[in-house]
Amino acid sequence: MEKTFQDFALTLASVCDRTDKKNALRILNYTQIELQAICRQIKANKLPVIMLNYAIKAEQLLKAENKILYCILRYPEQFISNDDSFTSPLFWSKNYPAICLSELLCGINLLGPNPIVLADGSEASFNQIVNVFEKMLNVKLGDPQDIKRRVLNRKVHITRFTDALRYALQNCEKK
Image (cartoon, rainbow, N blue to C red; front, top):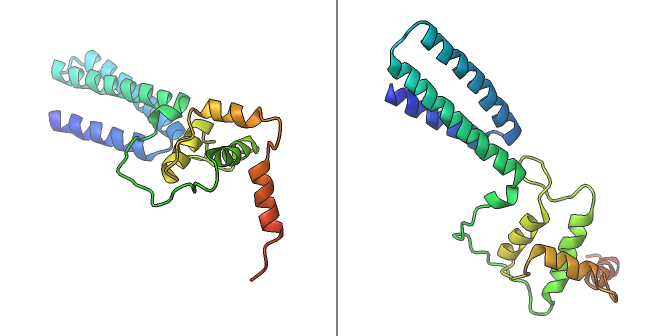
């Protein structure tokens, strides 16, 4: 019985990790309904208590996974891996202040729909975008909300870097 429960737990974890979150929630809810029916049958047929105990454990596991998925959907930025084993070979050049990158990221974030999305197709939050670019370009930009505020509150040259990019693109020589 323990082996079967362990197999169930591994399968459940695999489904939650590999399936998009909304479908995983549907699967969990369906499985929980089925498990409740099994518990009623165990009680009604007076089957061994150990079977009921494992069914209850499985139901508790489903509820825990359900809570985790709800948290992932509600607070996705809290579930970004902090795995620092990846070291990017790229660096933001000292020739350009970090506010230039901040300007780009704010512009991207303000586009609708956002061109940067998560694997499941949902929009990436500004916090996620900033965190990824900081790691990818080995640069510290600071608090994402503070970054956005600094860029959007500039009175002069609000799009200086974007204008420079536009100029470079319009005046490049075709090779």
